[in-house]
Image (tube, rainbow, N blue to C red; front, side, top):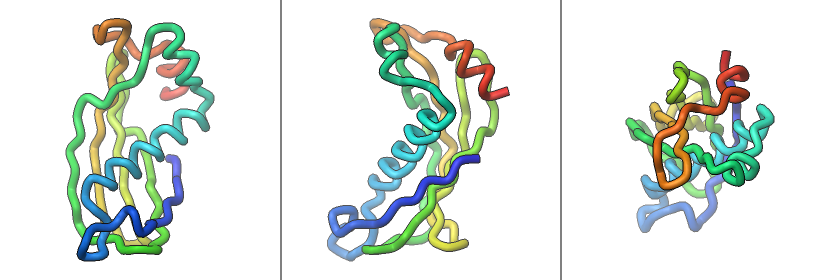
Length: 127
């Protein structure tokens, strides 16, 4: 499990003063990028080798609103991994209150956008 802190800035909010819904997707993307870096996967090296991670699917639930200057935490945990895909649960909380939940399916694509197996070193880290 990985935890990533986020502070809500004014630019993240809409006219009602709450976090604009699409920004939760940005928050969970930042958390995933930080997690991948933390476990030792170099995405720049992957790209140079012709492979990148891509989001295949997101199922999201917006449960409560975050507001300007809130301190949030994005928790990322592995739901399951196969040779071709990684499914993650990501939860955004303020203190212990769950604001947003998402199930995110990640795949790997090669040059030209063709599907590829997840890198072997990545799969080993997931088991």
